[in-house]
Length: 314
Image (cartoon, rainbow, N blue to C red):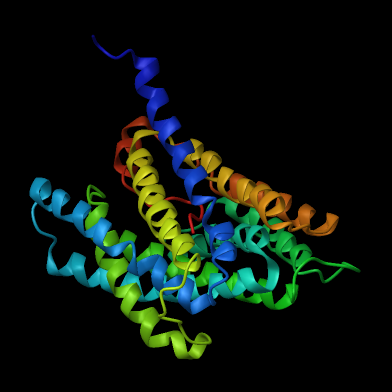
């Protein structure tokens, strides 16, 4: 029986929603593990490598081996991804899983201006409007105008959140520069994750050190973190990206920070202040508005397939 056009359009949307929901558990799983930032970052990648390697092997059988250029790009991306995870996991400790995840979406603005500086891609008028809104939201989340902000050290949490966005933006730009047609997903991700594992192990002494002892239930949560958000969530999102409009993808991916804030409140008892929640709303609206593409001719739409997501999926 032939699939109807409506069903064909619905499946990628459902897959993207499922991916965003899976990824939204990242922050709460980090907090539930009670592991140090370096430990949680290390095993999030390390436990994911075998599964990603298996997917990369299957992809290689269909598409052939990656070129050396693609490999080198993926390795460099892995270094940035290592820094991204280390900074993000530090941010979670200072400001909570929900707010730290919202701050990860600042990379939309950073990618736009970095692409302008490095690749000559002029940011859209939407990005120009969204930038002060997003940055204003970050200031509210920091607790600068709040008598009783949530978090151990909200200002420091925002600082590490900004560093998360910077390194995540670099990760996306490097992957995009070497992605070609964007047909590959598992191969570059497997290479980047393997290098990130090594880089995190090397950098861990600068971030409090990594505990290699296999303690329970800590490593149970870390295994879920690796196989859930890092493997399943990314695969689902990657599948859906070229099969639906970029604006719809940006909207769906905003499910992630919103759901993370809700999960963190229910599972972890995180209670951001009213001003911090207002900052979350400002960041979400700014990201959504800024990530909407300008109107383009229909013939150009097919050329955008395989682009990296415009919102964070940490």
